[in-house]
Image 1 (cartoon, rainbow over the protein chains, first blue to last red):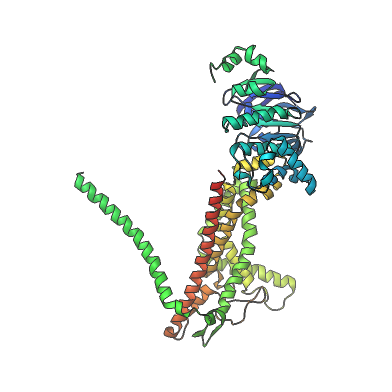
Image 2: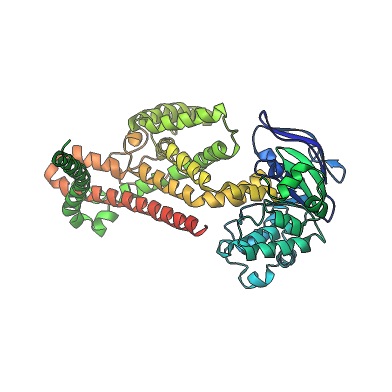
Length: 247
Length: 303
């Protein structure tokens, strides 16, 4: 997945400007930068969630397998099945654990009970949640702890088997133990998924990602292998940020 | 201001506001006590199951209860789909800053402020004389069939009257469904209509039901809108067709209070009728309150 010269405006205010960034396959790309730098906005353009905000307009292209996702012929519903998203605040539906995970499959038209069961189990296992919830699949998802809810949301996003998984600060509302679990999970997921993760937490970016992109004031300052960004950045601004001089 | 005078002002305000609050409770208590004391002993099974007799001085109110129930049921069937669809349009589909949506909201607020007698006249003019007459002409009825007061027209008139209640409470219920749930659904590849059917409406259902109950309890007690559109003075038969006239608890109260040849003989019946009407409306309001508290508790449990 790749953005080319992507500029996005809310009305007349430019949120991100001329971003060219490739999200490499089966790697974790971390998007870091201070608040309001446009990293979340960028993430949300990748599956066109920004379409929901009135008054946004963009120039440039985003390619998914060499298809322009803003092309007229692209059905945004199909796009979002291929590019899934996990949000900052866990947002399970007030339904059972099973129905939460099955939701994307059901709206996609899957009716076969066995198939649904298999896919739900597979997703919950994939999100390292199966053992904790297998005996209470029919209980409300709202009874889970915060960390479990977030892993449920990851399972829910994985159930439709997207190619790319976008994560918008998935662990920012969790305690350190739950955060560690999510990070471990991200490590495992990259064997199958292409992942882009927005994070405020520099250590987290260092721990989970292969590549890191540093955003500042709506621009992409620098992008490269995580190790290089953290130890030997090309840009002064990147160095100042990752060493904690501002941010 | 001296310390003493400040205290005096404080004391005066406390007593004044307290008195106002007490007055309000006293009024309700007075009405209820009076109605219960004079009516309770007459609310018997015979009273509830018999039609009026002896020139309104005997018998019961069975046709009025059934008439009120049938009227309210038809009204609910008419008002809920229109009200809920309107609210869904306003909250889910209309673009923000839509001029049309703003006009609809203004219309809803104004509709809520129209005196109920005006709805009665509107029902007579629009439903009976315009729609009814048109239907008679098209369907080839020689005599008046649809172009006369009947339960269908009365219930539609009430539906127009209660429409604002349904729209406002449904919109509130939709607003209470977290935006997060909508984005989560859309991010999973659901269409907007799937999101609406599977996430938004189920989430808003308790609020929508509360709106329905409030509309029913409002509609069940209104008399003015049905005066010209279908309520009958005295009709021992139950309504059997959509164009039948019907008896109604509220209208029956009015009739008993003003049209009786012997006021003394009718008085117990009048009290008993009022008691039944009050119990009915209170019961419906209670249902609304229960649904609302449950929803609130559920919402509180979600965080």
